[in-house]
Length: 221
Image 1 (tube, helix red, strand yellow):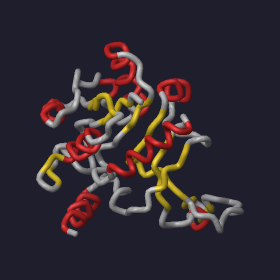
Image 2 (cartoon, rainbow, N blue to C red):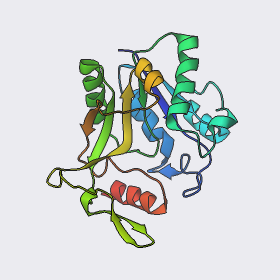
Image 3 (cartoon, rainbow, N blue to C red):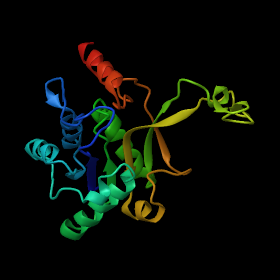
Image 4 (tube, rainbow, N blue to C red):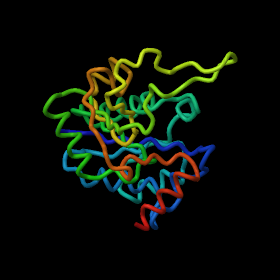
């Protein structure tokens, strides 16, 4: 297979400023994801899409491809990962030829393992359907509520599946074919293959100061 790894890394971060270049275990956060991608044989290139020159410099030094700084229209709070990935994919295929799949690695998931990544690519290769990493949720959706002016409203009005385990996308790994991504403009659908990640460490998504504190405690252990 020929897999393009795309790492989206916007410079602006309101909850944890500068998180992509912040040192975790002695290396910038984004380098953790670059190193994982470098260990995967099927990855033809690791393209970091960023609007920040510091992130670009660090990523290039770490061995990633940073051919341009992301356009301002793709560096806003409303720009989606799909928009960013399609921009990177279109450029890469026009310059280097077609790829079999796109693997999106969010830099905020530094502890995804090589083994999990390889398993995700294996499932994609075997079934040629999108693969998305998921983890079990801590609170059953049937026990969750929306707060409204008149009181509480159940998130799941008819919890017929109350006995089933519920899962949420953890953001650590997405794999999809270029055709499916362009057609659906989404990384997953009802037919996607769920890659279940049971490790709390691997499913950590660093979004704020508390998440960073957790990431550092995990390194200590």
